[in-house]
Length: 399
Ligand SMILES: Nc1ncnc2c1ncn2[C@@H]1O[C@H](COP(=O)(O)OP(=O)(O)OP(=O)(O)O)[C@@H](O)[C@H]1O
Ligand SMILES: [Mg+2]
Image 1: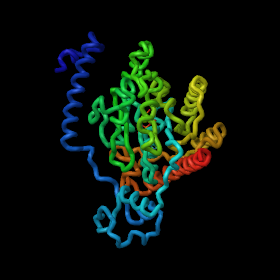
Image 2: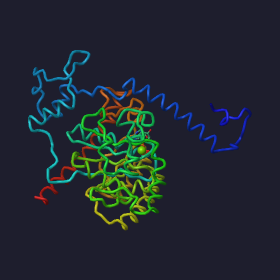
Image 3: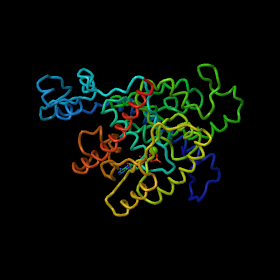
Image 4: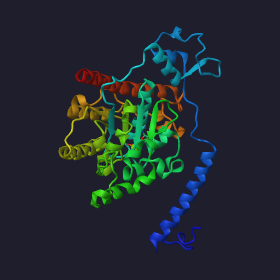
């Protein structure tokens, strides 16, 4: 099959790049198709939800331990015969006893762009872990994956996005042609109350295709419900409006570039969290990103309801501590007080297609797991506390 792409003798170049890449692409897609069939047959995506011990469940419900004792409300039993509870059950019990936090009805959900310029800072890791944490606290969260690397889709859905999602399952066609169809791609995930609008590598052409559309006559652009053409920068914002009220929080996982797709995210978002790592290279790239954001918000002036900087991959070195101090000197109280630690547990979770808030057991080490979960929980709780304060303030203003 690869005869022409792989010449019989060693070649240092490609005589006909187009033909070779075409053949390799066909071969790649054949393998993807075979895997897709296999995974559908195995129903890979169906997994049992995480369960919690009785102590964990009562803490989450906000009641004393005796609350669940002997009531037989558990969904499963542990190997040693102890009761275990799903988040679905915990939420039902929260609703029944009135301990579930509810976003005030007269405030809008918060749409948070997780934007960055530099790749690999932990943006997608933070995105999906934050979604799982917020859902554990009783909120309903939508993750919108806008990065063709699709790490957030993989982690949130527990699948291989290039194998398991077709083009029409992703945000690609929505942003290109049909923003009003946004709800059709939103899917449930293995985690209660976390839904996903996925993407995969089909997104690679979208940036060019959107730029091409700018040149076209407006009559060829997709239309909103009033029949008005939707500009290439507003596709996500218009699409999200069709579904946003079903959620408390919407998290937008952005690609590491300030192109048309990220501009869509920033146009749709009314909040932003920037993840940075404590090293000078990341800080420099973040300063460059700040300058791009300055120009962007100058051309599209709008306030952010919430803005914070999250320091990820904090280790115990003196260099990281100095760097953290520098970041705090520049950005002051916009930097979250808590930081997320550098941890082999956080790094290891994606290989189990999971997050630390979904896994019932450590990836490898109990101590390391506790440290990582604690640091994430503290950081995300700080965010949730801020958001609740914001909503309460807005609810009063909207009175
Ligand atoms: N706190 C952490 N401790 C250890 N490893 C981490 C931590 N946060 C993220 N990582 C690891 O760093 C790598 C990059 O993370 P991630 O994919 O979330 O970054 P990203 O900013 O979304 O990158 P990309 O530009 O590829 O989208 C992954 O291997 C992830 O597991
Ligand atoms: Mg990412």
